[in-house]
Length: 306
Image (cartoon, rainbow, N blue to C red; front, side):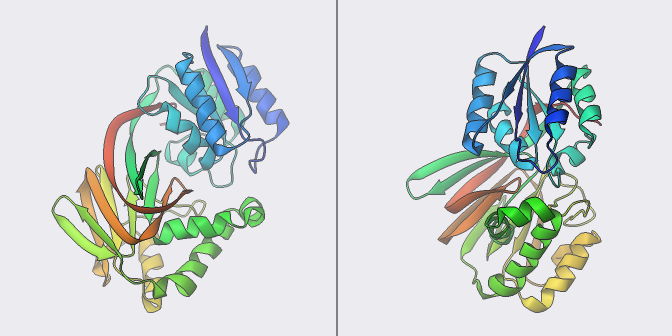
């Protein structure tokens, strides 16, 4: 019988003890299953890494997008399969991969899966001083505006837990209108012959880019193949309503002054002075001096509903 490890976040907004018992009971029908309870985000990655090293065929992340991100760090690039039981507020990864929102349906999908889907991820080599760190983004990453929004949203965990998407939207509007218009271009972006100096870059490599519930943001009509970058030179308050409207209605954002859309990317580099905020999958990665992003096809085996 294959071995499965369930790594759960009991403080996720939709987590209950009953749902966890249901998940364990269903998986026990087809797997030798073990439950783990990390006390922190790094511990979730450590537990997932140990499970992979010990030969677990399946590692299940039960929680929100943060739990999925941290568990995936250990699973990317291995033969271990990632399962997802959405129990957070927005559950972006689950929605993008067609995973049912109800835990009972999601676990049956995992338990009965014949063949996982192999998807690509983005490898992020980030530099801060003399230290380099490596991260893997599962659905989106960015530098500047959106990473600052993540920092602000995380600074008020109660509202993040209680209001979810509304809290992110409020944080985004606050940062966009109050803070970011004063930020001057200080980051040099480059990718496959393109260059720009600006304040923000959003990287899209799934169908949608969103932290706002069911609201889908896109850089244009084309799907990212494999990555697309939205580079913002400078944010001016008068342009914010149009940027949000065009992103929500999937219009071409590079028609807006001081915005550029770079499609068809396999790599992306940047250097910042002073440092710029970074995020992956809605998780803050702190301030960084620069780095390189690279598309890694077929790097994650995951159970999907597609």
